[in-house]
Image (cartoon, rainbow, N blue to C red; front, side, top):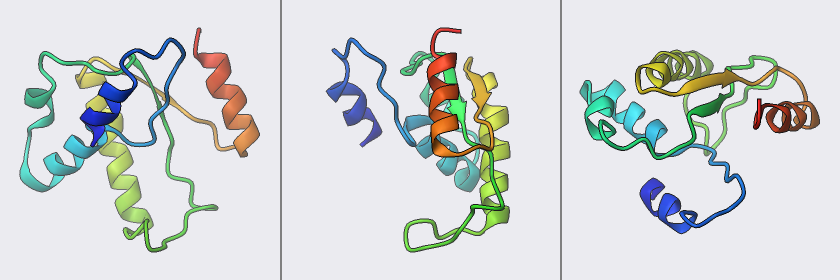
Length: 113
């Protein structure tokens, strides 16, 4: 599905944002089955080098039918992505723990920085 999304937006002339994508999917498989992300993306860096990363935020974290894992699992996933992204040549930029408007302003300010 992540590859299809990339194909769908290949001709986009403006920034396209993905909430989850190929790296997230492969990183999840890597946690379950061992190293594979670097191999899968060795010659293919499909995203912009700057990746916005949302840190775990206990004050707003909630489990529901789509977010089935607990907060500790979210922290482990974040830590894994935070170390994996630079290893794949990406620059993770951590989003601030502020409201939606503040995060949007932060992202827009850091698109060209």
